Length: 304
Image (tube, rainbow, N blue to C red; front, side, top):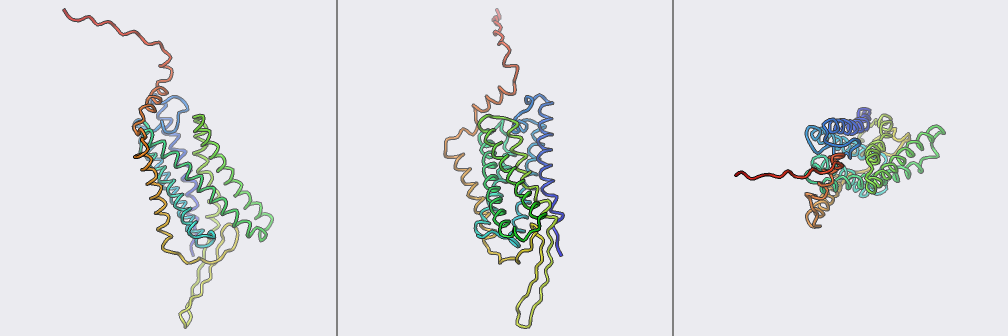
Protein backbone atom coordinates (compact mmCIF):
# COMPACT_ATOMS: atom_id res chain seq x y z
CA UNK A 1 0.00 0.00 0.00
CA UNK A 2 1.27 3.45 -0.95
CA UNK A 3 -0.33 6.86 -0.64
CA UNK A 4 0.76 10.34 -1.70
CA UNK A 5 -0.77 12.34 1.12
CA UNK A 6 2.66 13.59 2.11
CA UNK A 7 3.26 14.80 -1.44
CA UNK A 8 0.03 16.81 -1.26
CA UNK A 9 1.81 19.50 0.76
CA UNK A 10 4.22 20.28 -2.10
CA UNK A 11 1.95 22.79 -3.90
CA UNK A 12 1.29 24.60 -0.62
CA UNK A 13 4.95 24.65 0.41
CA UNK A 14 6.10 25.84 -3.03
CA UNK A 15 3.53 28.64 -3.10
CA UNK A 16 4.35 29.70 0.47
CA UNK A 17 8.09 29.65 -0.23
CA UNK A 18 7.83 31.90 -3.29
CA UNK A 19 5.41 34.37 -1.68
CA UNK A 20 7.48 34.51 1.52
CA UNK A 21 10.65 35.11 -0.51
CA UNK A 22 9.07 38.01 -2.37
CA UNK A 23 7.59 39.53 0.80
CA UNK A 24 10.71 39.25 2.95
CA UNK A 25 13.24 40.35 0.30
CA UNK A 26 11.13 43.30 -0.85
CA UNK A 27 10.48 44.41 2.74
CA UNK A 28 14.19 44.27 3.55
CA UNK A 29 15.12 46.16 0.36
CA UNK A 30 12.54 48.90 0.96
CA UNK A 31 13.51 49.23 4.62
CA UNK A 32 17.18 49.60 3.68
CA UNK A 33 16.37 52.23 1.05
CA UNK A 34 17.74 50.11 -1.77
CA UNK A 35 14.56 50.26 -3.86
CA UNK A 36 11.48 52.49 -4.11
CA UNK A 37 8.07 51.31 -2.87
CA UNK A 38 6.45 48.57 -4.98
CA UNK A 39 9.68 47.58 -6.72
CA UNK A 40 10.21 45.04 -9.45
CA UNK A 41 10.82 41.63 -7.89
CA UNK A 42 14.29 41.37 -9.42
CA UNK A 43 15.33 44.65 -7.81
CA UNK A 44 14.92 43.02 -4.40
CA UNK A 45 17.82 40.67 -5.16
CA UNK A 46 20.45 43.25 -6.03
CA UNK A 47 22.11 44.12 -2.74
CA UNK A 48 22.80 42.39 0.59
CA UNK A 49 21.21 41.37 2.84
CA UNK A 50 17.96 40.90 0.87
CA UNK A 51 19.99 39.42 -1.98
CA UNK A 52 20.67 36.26 0.04
CA UNK A 53 17.00 35.79 0.92
CA UNK A 54 16.03 36.32 -2.74
CA UNK A 55 18.55 33.83 -4.09
CA UNK A 56 17.94 31.13 -1.49
CA UNK A 57 14.15 31.45 -1.53
CA UNK A 58 13.69 31.24 -5.29
CA UNK A 59 16.22 28.41 -5.55
CA UNK A 60 14.31 26.39 -2.96
CA UNK A 61 11.06 27.27 -4.72
CA UNK A 62 12.43 26.01 -8.05
CA UNK A 63 13.49 22.71 -6.44
CA UNK A 64 10.06 22.24 -4.86
CA UNK A 65 8.35 22.99 -8.16
CA UNK A 66 10.60 20.49 -9.97
CA UNK A 67 9.76 17.83 -7.37
CA UNK A 68 6.06 18.55 -7.83
CA UNK A 69 6.28 18.19 -11.61
CA UNK A 70 8.28 14.95 -11.46
CA UNK A 71 6.00 13.31 -8.89
CA UNK A 72 2.87 14.24 -10.81
CA UNK A 73 4.43 13.07 -14.08
CA UNK A 74 5.37 9.66 -12.67
CA UNK A 75 1.92 9.36 -11.14
CA UNK A 76 0.19 10.13 -14.43
CA UNK A 77 2.53 7.91 -16.44
CA UNK A 78 1.74 4.93 -14.27
CA UNK A 79 -2.00 5.28 -14.14
CA UNK A 80 -3.33 7.89 -16.58
CA UNK A 81 -0.71 8.50 -19.26
CA UNK A 82 -0.88 10.76 -22.28
CA UNK A 83 -1.62 9.24 -25.65
CA UNK A 84 2.00 9.70 -26.73
CA UNK A 85 4.66 8.69 -24.23
CA UNK A 86 7.34 10.64 -26.11
CA UNK A 87 5.22 13.80 -25.96
CA UNK A 88 4.68 13.20 -22.25
CA UNK A 89 8.44 13.05 -21.70
CA UNK A 90 8.98 16.24 -23.71
CA UNK A 91 6.28 17.83 -21.58
CA UNK A 92 8.19 16.96 -18.42
CA UNK A 93 11.41 18.30 -19.95
CA UNK A 94 9.76 21.66 -20.60
CA UNK A 95 8.59 21.83 -17.00
CA UNK A 96 12.02 20.99 -15.60
CA UNK A 97 13.62 23.53 -17.94
CA UNK A 98 11.35 26.23 -16.53
CA UNK A 99 12.42 25.40 -12.97
CA UNK A 100 16.07 25.52 -14.05
CA UNK A 101 15.53 29.00 -15.51
CA UNK A 102 13.94 30.09 -12.23
CA UNK A 103 16.98 28.85 -10.29
CA UNK A 104 19.38 30.61 -12.70
CA UNK A 105 17.37 33.82 -12.42
CA UNK A 106 17.69 33.61 -8.65
CA UNK A 107 21.48 33.16 -8.70
CA UNK A 108 22.30 35.81 -11.32
CA UNK A 109 21.65 39.28 -9.81
CA UNK A 110 20.06 41.86 -12.07
CA UNK A 111 22.41 44.56 -10.78
CA UNK A 112 25.49 42.79 -12.18
CA UNK A 113 24.15 40.88 -15.20
CA UNK A 114 20.78 42.41 -16.13
CA UNK A 115 20.40 40.82 -19.56
CA UNK A 116 21.00 37.18 -18.49
CA UNK A 117 18.77 37.71 -15.44
CA UNK A 118 15.89 39.05 -17.52
CA UNK A 119 16.43 36.38 -20.18
CA UNK A 120 16.19 33.60 -17.57
CA UNK A 121 13.03 35.18 -16.13
CA UNK A 122 11.38 35.47 -19.56
CA UNK A 123 12.27 31.87 -20.45
CA UNK A 124 10.87 30.71 -17.11
CA UNK A 125 7.48 32.26 -17.82
CA UNK A 126 7.37 31.14 -21.45
CA UNK A 127 8.30 27.54 -20.65
CA UNK A 128 5.95 27.25 -17.69
CA UNK A 129 3.08 28.68 -19.75
CA UNK A 130 3.69 26.12 -22.50
CA UNK A 131 3.87 23.39 -19.85
CA UNK A 132 0.61 24.51 -18.26
CA UNK A 133 -1.17 24.73 -21.62
CA UNK A 134 -0.16 21.17 -22.56
CA UNK A 135 -1.06 19.99 -19.07
CA UNK A 136 -4.54 21.53 -19.24
CA UNK A 137 -5.26 20.13 -22.71
CA UNK A 138 -4.22 16.60 -21.70
CA UNK A 139 -6.25 16.76 -18.49
CA UNK A 140 -9.37 17.94 -20.33
CA UNK A 141 -9.00 15.12 -22.86
CA UNK A 142 -8.80 12.55 -20.10
CA UNK A 143 -11.72 14.15 -18.32
CA UNK A 144 -13.93 14.10 -21.41
CA UNK A 145 -13.21 10.42 -21.92
CA UNK A 146 -14.62 9.45 -18.51
CA UNK A 147 -16.94 12.37 -17.78
CA UNK A 148 -20.14 10.35 -18.29
CA UNK A 149 -19.07 7.91 -15.59
CA UNK A 150 -19.05 10.60 -12.91
CA UNK A 151 -21.82 11.39 -10.49
CA UNK A 152 -23.25 14.94 -10.66
CA UNK A 153 -21.14 16.04 -7.67
CA UNK A 154 -17.99 14.48 -9.16
CA UNK A 155 -18.64 16.24 -12.48
CA UNK A 156 -18.85 19.57 -10.71
CA UNK A 157 -15.65 18.97 -8.76
CA UNK A 158 -13.70 17.83 -11.79
CA UNK A 159 -14.89 20.78 -13.88
CA UNK A 160 -14.05 23.20 -11.07
CA UNK A 161 -10.46 21.92 -10.88
CA UNK A 162 -9.93 22.35 -14.62
CA UNK A 163 -11.51 25.81 -14.55
CA UNK A 164 -9.20 26.78 -11.66
CA UNK A 165 -6.08 25.71 -13.56
CA UNK A 166 -7.15 27.46 -16.78
CA UNK A 167 -8.01 30.65 -14.87
CA UNK A 168 -4.60 30.93 -13.22
CA UNK A 169 -2.80 29.97 -16.41
CA UNK A 170 -4.62 32.82 -18.14
CA UNK A 171 -3.83 35.16 -15.24
CA UNK A 172 -0.15 34.26 -15.55
CA UNK A 173 -0.21 34.97 -19.30
CA UNK A 174 -1.97 38.31 -18.88
CA UNK A 175 0.31 39.34 -16.03
CA UNK A 176 3.41 38.39 -18.00
CA UNK A 177 2.30 40.34 -21.09
CA UNK A 178 1.39 43.43 -19.04
CA UNK A 179 4.70 43.24 -17.21
CA UNK A 180 6.67 43.09 -20.46
CA UNK A 181 4.70 45.85 -22.18
CA UNK A 182 4.05 48.30 -19.33
CA UNK A 183 6.59 47.33 -16.65
CA UNK A 184 3.78 47.03 -14.09
CA UNK A 185 5.04 45.60 -10.82
CA UNK A 186 1.54 44.46 -9.82
CA UNK A 187 1.28 42.46 -13.05
CA UNK A 188 4.63 40.84 -12.25
CA UNK A 189 3.46 39.87 -8.76
CA UNK A 190 0.26 38.38 -10.19
CA UNK A 191 2.16 36.40 -12.83
CA UNK A 192 4.51 34.83 -10.27
CA UNK A 193 1.71 33.93 -7.85
CA UNK A 194 -0.43 32.53 -10.68
CA UNK A 195 2.31 30.08 -11.68
CA UNK A 196 2.10 28.38 -8.29
CA UNK A 197 -1.67 28.72 -7.83
CA UNK A 198 -2.18 26.81 -11.09
CA UNK A 199 -0.99 23.60 -9.42
CA UNK A 200 -3.20 23.82 -6.31
CA UNK A 201 -5.68 21.12 -7.52
CA UNK A 202 -2.84 18.63 -7.09
CA UNK A 203 -3.38 18.97 -3.34
CA UNK A 204 -6.70 17.14 -3.42
CA UNK A 205 -5.62 14.78 -6.21
CA UNK A 206 -2.54 13.61 -4.33
CA UNK A 207 -4.63 13.06 -1.22
CA UNK A 208 -7.16 10.99 -3.18
CA UNK A 209 -4.49 8.77 -4.73
CA UNK A 210 -4.10 5.27 -3.32
CA UNK A 211 -2.44 2.24 -4.81
CA UNK A 212 -2.95 -1.37 -3.89
CA UNK A 213 -0.92 -3.80 -5.95
CA UNK A 214 -1.19 -7.54 -5.60
CA UNK A 215 1.06 -9.69 -7.74
CA UNK A 216 0.79 -13.45 -8.02
CA UNK A 217 2.97 -15.67 -10.19
CA UNK A 218 1.52 -18.76 -11.88
CA UNK A 219 3.29 -22.04 -12.61
CA UNK A 220 4.17 -20.88 -16.14
CA UNK A 221 5.91 -17.72 -14.90
CA UNK A 222 3.07 -15.37 -15.84
CA UNK A 223 2.32 -12.41 -13.62
CA UNK A 224 -1.11 -11.16 -12.73
CA UNK A 225 -1.37 -7.67 -11.24
CA UNK A 226 -4.39 -6.04 -9.81
CA UNK A 227 -4.04 -2.31 -9.45
CA UNK A 228 -6.69 -0.19 -7.85
CA UNK A 229 -6.19 3.55 -7.84
CA UNK A 230 -8.23 6.57 -7.00
CA UNK A 231 -6.93 9.24 -9.40
CA UNK A 232 -8.83 12.28 -10.59
CA UNK A 233 -11.91 10.62 -9.08
CA UNK A 234 -11.83 7.75 -11.62
CA UNK A 235 -10.62 4.15 -11.78
CA UNK A 236 -7.98 3.72 -14.46
CA UNK A 237 -5.86 1.08 -16.13
CA UNK A 238 -2.60 -0.43 -14.85
CA UNK A 239 0.80 1.00 -15.54
CA UNK A 240 2.21 0.77 -19.03
CA UNK A 241 5.79 -0.37 -19.65
CA UNK A 242 8.39 2.30 -19.00
CA UNK A 243 10.98 2.99 -21.66
CA UNK A 244 14.57 4.09 -21.19
CA UNK A 245 13.62 7.38 -22.85
CA UNK A 246 11.55 8.14 -19.74
CA UNK A 247 14.78 9.46 -18.23
CA UNK A 248 16.65 10.50 -21.39
CA UNK A 249 14.10 12.66 -23.23
CA UNK A 250 13.47 15.17 -20.39
CA UNK A 251 17.23 15.49 -19.92
CA UNK A 252 17.70 16.16 -23.64
CA UNK A 253 14.98 18.82 -23.58
CA UNK A 254 16.71 20.55 -20.67
CA UNK A 255 20.01 20.46 -22.56
CA UNK A 256 18.36 21.97 -25.65
CA UNK A 257 16.96 24.83 -23.57
CA UNK A 258 20.36 25.40 -21.93
CA UNK A 259 22.01 25.41 -25.36
CA UNK A 260 19.49 27.94 -26.63
CA UNK A 261 20.17 30.24 -23.68
CA UNK A 262 23.93 29.93 -24.15
CA UNK A 263 23.63 30.68 -27.87
CA UNK A 264 21.51 33.76 -27.26
CA UNK A 265 23.93 35.10 -24.66
CA UNK A 266 27.13 34.26 -26.55
CA UNK A 267 26.30 34.84 -30.21
CA UNK A 268 23.59 37.47 -30.44
CA UNK A 269 25.82 40.39 -29.36
CA UNK A 270 23.88 40.88 -26.14
CA UNK A 271 25.35 43.34 -23.64
CA UNK A 272 25.40 40.97 -20.69
CA UNK A 273 26.57 43.76 -18.40
CA UNK A 274 23.57 45.79 -19.53
CA UNK A 275 25.03 49.26 -19.05
CA UNK A 276 21.80 50.91 -20.18
CA UNK A 277 19.77 48.71 -17.87
CA UNK A 278 22.08 49.48 -14.98
CA UNK A 279 21.58 53.19 -15.60
CA UNK A 280 17.82 52.68 -15.51
CA UNK A 281 18.07 50.75 -12.25
CA UNK A 282 20.20 53.47 -10.72
CA UNK A 283 17.70 56.12 -11.79
CA UNK A 284 14.76 54.19 -10.35
CA UNK A 285 16.66 53.61 -7.13
CA UNK A 286 17.49 57.28 -6.69
CA UNK A 287 13.82 58.20 -7.16
CA UNK A 288 13.14 61.68 -5.95
CA UNK A 289 16.83 62.55 -5.78
CA UNK A 290 16.86 62.97 -9.55
CA UNK A 291 14.27 65.73 -9.32
CA UNK A 292 16.55 67.95 -7.24
CA UNK A 293 18.48 70.57 -9.23
CA UNK A 294 22.12 69.75 -9.66
CA UNK A 295 24.48 71.88 -7.60
CA UNK A 296 27.16 73.73 -9.54
CA UNK A 297 30.66 72.40 -8.86
CA UNK A 298 32.70 74.39 -6.39
CA UNK A 299 35.65 76.31 -7.73
CA UNK A 300 38.91 74.96 -6.39
CA UNK A 301 41.72 77.41 -5.95
CA UNK A 302 45.18 76.04 -6.48
CA UNK A 303 47.69 76.37 -3.71
CA UNK A 304 50.10 79.22 -4.11
